[in-house]
Image (cartoon, rainbow, N blue to C red; front, side, top):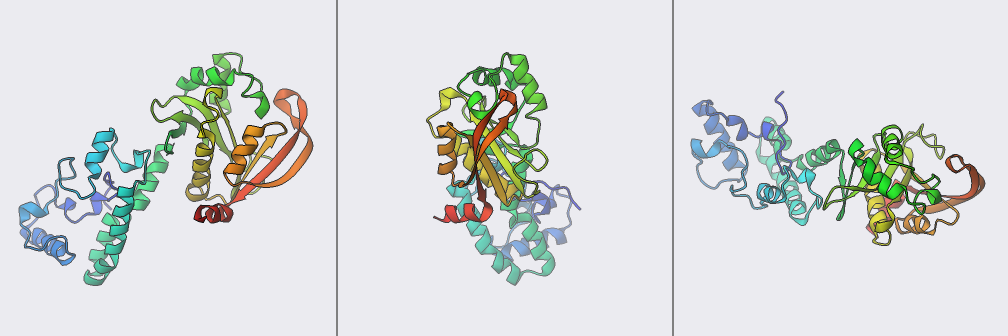
Length: 317
């Protein structure tokens, strides 16, 4: 099986009949058959020459009704999978056109031809979503959520040292950069712990995490998790936290197969309560005398949850 070569738009070039004609070592018969296939599925309304049918790969200056490669070049990225606006209206149209084109190909092509075209063109949306997961990054309109790195320690300390940030969430202010580095290495080292960053500079301004089974006391199910977060004080009141939470909910339900997400806040944390309400969480219960180990005290806790079905219904309005 050939190695996958995923193009900027999500097409699998390694499966494309035209791309696999490179280099120009194919026989006249192979070139002719590929040209005939292209005319059969309606890509060309005239006989295609051998020189024209062999694809040399996408380039920004090449004709494409969606300008995908050119758009990526302008943004300094390699693929739509890296774009913070994915899926943009342009790509949604591309997906829709491709989907509408598939039944005709199934009808006029042999099973072998259709299987090759399906792999090459009709799985582009799945390919891009897979590529987005592999980057370890999530995007919203204004934010990038990415894995924590050692170099983030100073930025973390800048906000985690604020006494208005940690204590209300259940942890004391950081004392120095070394403590922040230790937290990055030993606490936020899980695969679902993300630094919240502004897309414009990529620097960490907060944290959001999905705690999977074994790392939370809210559930014992493998298809449920707990969400936690905090945000640097200079960025409060801008709607950034709901923006990050909504993307993490999408990620939890669509990317990693969660059926329910749990979340909580301590009495008095009105901002966190409001974020959870805005993002659709349903209130479940109140607990008295909850141990807060890092603060050496007990508090009143409030717990909410959101199921995948509830999330879907909310999205549909």
